[in-house]
Image 1 (cartoon, one colour):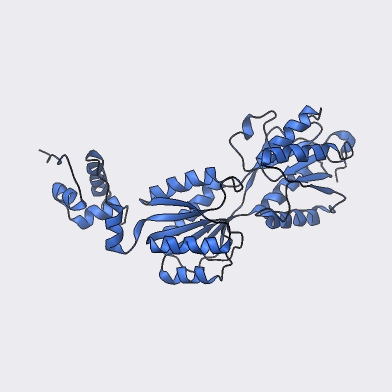
Image 2 (cartoon, helix red, strand yellow):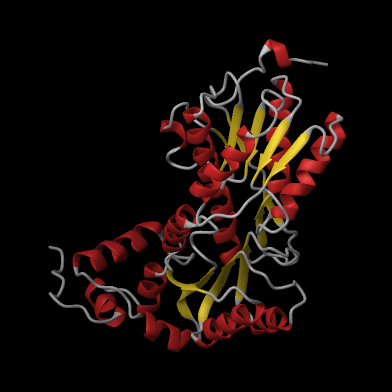
Length: 349
C-alpha cells in the first residue's frame, strides 16, 4: 500500500522522508539536474505537485551561494517590441527549473552597470541582458565574468562577447531586397531605417551589401523615407504620405523597419487609391501576430525568435567556454502584399 503524503509538506526534507529518498535526490529532481533516474525524478515532482509544495528559492540560494533564478534586464518595451521575446524567454527559463526576475533598465551604460550590480548582489544564477549597450570590454562585464555568473546578451547593440546571441538583421535586409529583385522591382523605398534606430547600422550594412550585389545605387534606385511620430503606426502613416508625394509609379516596392510601420503605410496608401501589391509591393519585419490577417496579408521577415531564445537559454546552462558569437538568420514569409512588378515598370535582367 502506498504511503500517504502528509497534508502539509514544508521542506525538501519532509518530502524526502515521505518518499523514502535522500534530500539530495529530492532537491536535484525538483531543480531538474542530471544524474537522477527519470522515473524517480517524475515520482518526486508528482509528489510535490500533489502536496502543492515548491522549494524555498531563498533557502536554495543561501545554501548554494546563488539563487535559482535568472535576472533579465530589459530596455524600453515599446521601442524594442519585446512582448513575444519575453513570454518565450520566461517559458524557456522555467523549463530549466529556474525563475525569472524582469527589470527594466535605464537605457544608459551607467544604468546597465547598476542593474548588473543589483543582479549580482541578489545572487542570480545567471543574467540575461536584452539590447545591451555596453562595449564587450566594459569593466562591469569583466567583473561579472570573474564572479562566475553566466551572462547571456540577446541582440546586444555592441556585440562581441562569447555568449552573445543576435538576429542577423543585415541578412534580413539582403533577403528582402533580393526578393524584390526576383519579382522585377528595381526602385525601392526604405521606410523608417536609419542609423538612429537601435539596429539601424546593421540594417544599413545589409542594404548596402545588397545594392552592391544587385547593381543598385543610392539614392537613384533606393529612396529612404524618414520621420518622427509618437508611435510606429503614426510613423507609418507619415511615411506613407511621403511615399505618395514621390513621382507616381517610380518606386514600386517598400521595405519597412517593422510590421507596425508597414500597417500604417498600407492603410494610408489604400485610402489614397494605391493597390497593394498591384501598384506597390510591401514587406514588413517581425512577423507580428496581425500580419497574416490584414488585407492583403503582409509579407514580412520572421526574425527567428524561437531559435534566438532557445540559443540564449541553452547558453545559460552550457559548460562550453570560448564560444563564438551566435547569430540567427531571419527568413522571409511571403504573403499577399508582394507580387511581380507591373509590366510597365518591368526591367528584368
